[in-house]
Structures are given as C-alpha cells and as structure tokens.
Length: 300
Image (cartoon, rainbow, N blue to C red; front, top):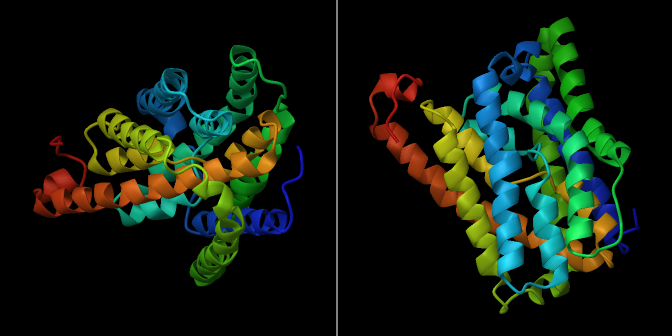
C-alpha cells in the first residue's frame, strides 16, 4: 500500500488504535455466543449479507456509472460499499436500541467474509474501470484481524477468565478508545480538509447522501421484525470500516490523499444522516407497546 502523506499517516495509525481499543471494550462485555450469533441464524445472516454485500455494492455501482463523478470519488465509494461493519458502530447501535448480540455477530460475520469478497470485487472494479492496482486477501485479513477479530477475542477471553476484571476495565478502555478517536480524527480531518473542500459543489455530497440514505432504508427493510435488528442492519449498511475502505482506496487509487478525503467525507455524511434515523427509531420505540420493543412486535 502506498504511504499516506505525512502527518496524516500518524493520525490514521492513531485512528486504527482507537478502533482496536473500542472493539476490545466491546469484547470485555461480550461472550462467545454473541460473536457466533448470526452463524446460528442462517436466515438472518443471509438477509444481512444481502443488504450489505449485494444490494449496497450494486447501488453504488449504479451511482458510479450513472453520474460523472471524479475518479477519486468513484474509488472511495466502491471501497466503502465493499468494506465490513465499522468496529465503532456496535456501541452506537446499542445506544440506539439495537440488539447487542446481533451487532457483535454482524461485526464478526461480515469481517470474516470481507477477507474473501473485498479482493474479488476490487479485481472486478479494476477491470471495469480500466484501473491499475490490486489488494491481496492478506492485506484485508491483517486489517480485519488487527481491528476486529483479535481485540474482540481478547476481550471475550478476559471476560470468561476474569469477569470482575473485565467489568472493571471495560468502560475505561472503551472511553479511552473514543477519546483517542476524537483526538486523532479531528487533526486527520484538518489535514484532509483542503482535499475534502475540493469535492463540494460538483454533486459529490448529494450522491454520497443518496448512497447513505439507500443504505439506511435497505438495512431497515431487511432487518426483519425485530426493531433492534432493523436499527443495527440499517446503520451497518450505511456505514463501513474506515480502515478497510482506506486500504482499498489507496491500493486502487492513483494518489492517496484525494481517496482518503473522499472516504472521510462519506463517513461524515453517513454520520449526519444516521442521527435523524436514530432519533426517529427512538421515538417509534418510545411510543410502541412493550411487547413490540422487546422484539415481539412487527410494526415499522
């Protein structure tokens, strides 16, 4: 992978470290059955993969072909559409009323699948758009292992062996991860802002908002009757793992900085759009009967 321009490279490293700590905090509050949740529910697993790994990439491909976007934006959107669940999302999903086991199970299932699917889709993209570059399964596996699988497994093992210790340190670890994400993310935005500003005024933001909105709607519709699962899948489909997306964008793009800026801009747009969706679901949950909130109801 080509190196990202300094000092943004150090900020990206800190962002990855913050993701690792956040997932470790999740693991300290989880069990193995949570990580394997979707593998014991094949119907829900198929719906989840349909939303994230089939419909969303197809929608993105349609937007990329239909609109005359800068090549850097096309690369970034495809990279985001094929990336797994962002590891910082389960905490956000659970605050929004999502089911914890499903959020963690989706994190694990899609991360594992990405090791195979991301290199394949990248090869298709390179051929379709006459690009150069590739990304090896090992590259994706390293990112997924370092930021998802390893910290989650370590957290679960610590909880299994020493539950009191896990309970004591889970919140501080997760809090430190969140603080580190803010401390590293803001300077990264600052250094990337000139490149981000260059994407305004040409329809890029509108296309990104459309992509995120379709992701929210698709996940919501395919999440099934359980209200919590709907929220989890909606947020997961609209937002993606920044580490994998950046690895793909830099590998396929001709320059690193514009692709990084486009990935960051989409993540900002997706976060902004997810706020009213979360508030809407909270209001619906607050006005629904208790049986529906617990997952027994089927209303939209």
